[in-house]
Image (tube, rainbow, N blue to C red; front, side, top):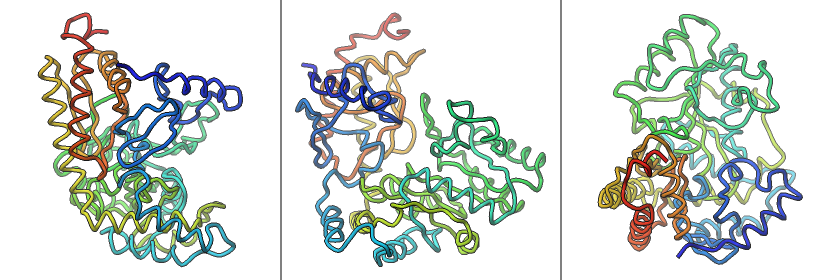
Length: 412
């Protein structure tokens, strides 16, 4: 039986009177007309909406939940720090403790600086690259997402052409395109910024081709270009030492966020000694950048991930989950594609349009499995064998609700 979300709908109507759009930002972009919009509580791998419906969460708050909601060790660390202060006129030594933990843990990190959101870290990284090189231009992957700063929002409301004047784009996995830009702007490219692999919306995710990252690094070193990896989404889910270790290269700067504090607001930028002087000179700050409680939560999160080898656990679980879902789909005559890394799967039912897949996702959500149709999903170390059984049961019911494949169903 489909979940009833009357209270969510009523709350959403109240919200629209006092909040533009009712729910703003990326949460608002994925609001379902018929579905949950507000939560009432969360625990482990699950949350409950305001109507009391329970969901196994395969979005993990869009990535921040990595150890499970309300993780006792993480919450205890944050609460203990709150006893002594959070935002004070001086920084807390927990900031130093956390920086030392990151430097010890992340292979390419010689130092760390902190902010609130992943977009803070990416914006700061670009400023540091420009300061270090004296150059203007940024090279990014076409449709790559690195936050909501104006330089990332070409042709969107509120932006001007000048905001992206110095932003250049190339296709993913295309070394020749990067070389062509270097030839065109031989002394004005400050940095190359990219996620560890392509996880854009609306299409299958793509891993790096063999030799891709080695080639990118070689071009950057040869031409004095700062190499920035945006691990805001992938951080601590591929390799605890950094996705670059998994893919065999060394960046100059790594942007981290989301999972770093298991849901407490924090982001980090880590980098090499070569970038340290420029990082010191760039002015980038915020009133809440020095909150001590999230830093304590982050250190506890990172230590716990190391203790349990969290990245490996999520990789193994993701592989099992993805295989199970593909098999369930096949049993109903559907071809479910799972792309990206196992801990961040992007699902798509093979079809000329997304309508069929979106309908399947809606059926899943209405039965208590929360995921999205045009965004990569996430697993956490809190997802269990019991969850897996339930997920596959819900997926099976959702495919049954779609009915057998037909040309009409597939084309939407």
